[in-house]
Structure formats: structure tokens, C-alpha cells
Length: 183
Length: 221
Image (tube, rainbow over all chains, first blue to last red; front, side, top):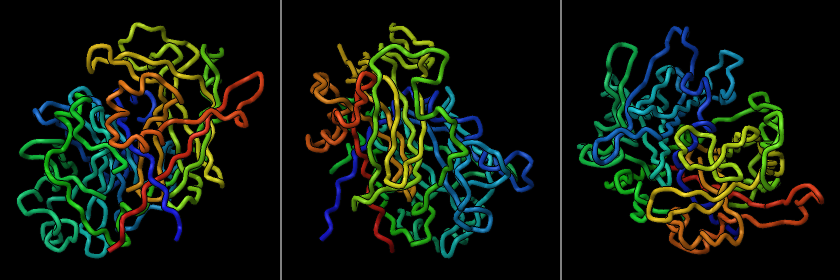
């Protein structure tokens, strides 16, 4: 039997990552001129409903055809490739944003974006998924949503602000707490 | 349980930020996006990103050190070409961050942020200076043991890890609610680097070794 090594424990990202982890084009998963660009934005809120000004959000998603990206991550955008990865620190009002494309469906999985949140006070990240409001039919067959109690599913579905802008608030704690995943 | 729980009341910032409801444990299909990871390339990094002592016109103050180790999966296999990022306070215990109000000097020759990719043997290596301890306002006389923040990618987004590396024998370990949020001592010990004379460069810099082990990817549906 192979020895399984214990994983290195997680520790908080702390309050002072802002000069190290975010990078200029982190929120731009696609360039602004992209014909199918959408904006995803929202706030991170704590259990008192106050904004979390020192969170780091990362997203990772399939391309518009539902394919897993194979290009480079995009720390520097020297090509027009879609990397599928984005990173954005929250501002003093707890806001974040990304410019990306809506991912395609993949098998039974409804279109979604994987979301990871790090923050001071989070000893390990919280993980969730963002789904899109226009895909209600596909949500009914999505295996991950099926594992979520029906009353909490709406916390995983972004709101359409207009045809190209979606709002997705992340509530770390409280009555409308976002569904977080143990994966 | 290797990782700390979300709620660890001695670390006060967890109280309003720890999720209170049950996490959902989905079965992920083999093509799930979470089982793949972003990949980064050398062309995305700067030439001096892995040497924090050469990013300015002069040398930073403090004790020059080499920090190196391997990035491994749960079976002990090296994880190649993975992005490792780090950031830290300067030798006086001050971050080059506007929010850091600790009245210790900034060092114009030290920013304290670096990046590298692991090699074919899973190894990362940085040259930097040993960070200082610093106070934080969690409780009276709360001082963080000297530490370097690490952020690593694996081969699956589920393996994404942000953690902190500590230095051996620090007397502040016993008083630090962040390190002590990890329930078991043996797991805390795995965040402590090892002084290594084979890594040390004579007459130049002390060497520390610290391996990072990523979690197993979840069972596929």
C-alpha cells in the first residue's frame, strides 16, 4: 500500500496580500473588446451584513463551448487567449468584478463558474459555484444543484442586472448564507 | 482533521466570517471544472520574481535566507510547473501594504512579494530575508510568529492552497491563535520549516527546507 501523505494545513490569507496576489489584468478573463464579454460582479458580506474589504476572489471556468481551458493562466495578457482564470481583491465596499464569457454547458452540468474566496478570518477558503438565471431548465438536471437543499439553491444563482451584467453576492454567514462546497 | 475549522473564536476575525451552515458535499463528475487547474508559464513571470533581495536598487536589510522545498501530491509525487507565490513582512515586521499601521520602518529595498514555478522535481526556491514578528490587534500583546505566506496551485482547483510557513523554535508559537487554530500539534509542526546546512550557502545565506503537500482530489462520481 502506498503511503498517503497528510496535506499541508491551510492558514488564512491575512489582511496584507493586496500588494502581492492581485495583478493588473486579474479580473479580465477576456479583453474588453470581446464580442461576448459579460461582467460578473458583487459584494462579499460577513455575518453582520457588513462588507468584507479584504477578500480575494478567484474564478475558474470552462469556455463558451463548455471546454476546460488549456491556455496559460493569464498573469500577463500577451495574447488574446481566454485563460478561464481570474483573480480580484475586494475594494473597501467589499465589491469585486470580473469580465469574462458565459461558460457553455458540460454534459449534465448547467453553465457555471467555480468561485473560491480567501479572506482575513477565513482559515481556509470557501468554495462555491455561480450559475446563471436564464438556465433554470438546466438547473433542474444539474447534479451539484441536486445535492443542495432546494431552499438554499437561489444563493448559487446570479441575478441579471442587464443583458451582459450579472450580480453575485457572497454571504459568508447568516440567514442568506451562500452555499459552500466541501470538495 | 488536518485543516483548521472555519470557526476558531480565539482568532476573532473568524467569528463573523466563518460559514455557519452545513457545507454541501457534491459528487463531482470526472469532467468537472474543479478537477482541472489553471496552468501558468515562465513567460508570465519576471526574471527576478524568485529573488526578493534583488527587486530594488539596493539590498534589503535583514538576515538573507534561501527558502526551498518540494510541492508534492498526496502520494508523494512531485507537482511540476505549478505556480508558487509568496509574500511577507520585512525584517522589521512591516508589510509594504498601506493597511499595515505597525510603527516599524519600511525598507525601500524590500517589497516582499515573489513568484516561481516548480521544476521537474516539484522544487521551488526563493531568496529573501527573514521576516520579523509583528503585533496585531487580536488581543493584548498579540504578536505573530515570523512567517512567510504561500499560495500554490495544484493539478486540480480543489487543491488550491494558501498557507503560512514558520521558522523553527519560535517562542511565539504557543501564543498564536492562527497557528493554534490547527487542532493537532503534529499538523501544526508541518508548517514549520527546517534549517538545512546543505541548502545554506557558506558566507552568504542560511537555508530553510519546507515541503508542501497538496490534498487528494475528491473521489470522482
